Image (cartoon, rainbow, N blue to C red):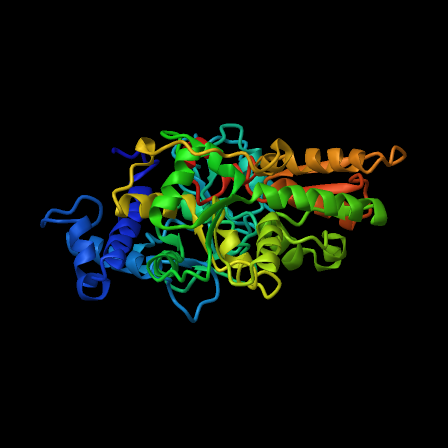
Length: 449
């Protein structure tokens, strides 16, 4: 069936994943590896870049990331240097709207003497002197001065993206939370998350009867695969070869019960279910990590619950989150989760096997509570904790929560906390706007954002 894509970038990523998956299932990947770029961009006419050969060279780099990327780079988000356009990097520019007025408020406002005037009295900015304070832009009555910023840098609120000597995007691993915002926002598709589809395909193809293979689906799945019912997605996972499908929302129910107890005991707690939020706290506010809940995320909590009962089980997490790929590498989580793929990657797996889930039976999906499934949206964790506190019967405790919808709101709340200002007794941190339903691994990014 026809697929809807937010952009040509997402389509190329999807096609790359599909081609790699199809060949991996058919055991022809190694021998046909170099044929993939030409299969996606056939013919001799370029449609996106300077020439078809560069288009294919970039696709070749995408294939590498679809196969797991650079093993020496621990970060799950990688840049494709050859795809980066080296977007304009100057912070502020004077546009043609400048009227060459006689007030010169921009020049008066500039504390670094970066504004100079030409013979027609029009303003210009000396980029070597500019400190990008923005005072000139604020002072101009015509709004003729604008800030130009790379889309990837604008998307990366943790400020992990900078530029190398050749003006190409560079990710500072020490600042990257693996949220994937840059992946969806780069118009040239020069940033991509590594994929574990080959590992998943290997598990599917070489199943052992003694090791049950689980697909653990995130609650945000209800906002995806809109052409089918949730139960049909489950049926599709079984058609791929999974032995069982379970909801990560069951883990959310367990987390709410445990975290509410921790909150009552400590009096103040920050949620730990969002791995990008946890990373942001660890990297930027290390003194506040003591307030992070000691609970594992719903993904890891349910994985632990399953493996305590079935030690030989294998678990693949399927969700909207690229940061989950990084979380699964942690020593505290890796024993419980074997692989992580996104909804985008699951769609590619379905299509690589010609599985149309809309034609499958609608299996029953009734394992988790509505509160557990609510973890997928901003505010959902808070509501689950509120109800869990009530269930404990502590009527004297009043939950006062700060719900952070996106990393910028997280930053503000953490700054307040670091300064001793009132933020209540519970902080719900969600790195993606909207919550997990806004994750970078969702199928429809534009609708998400």
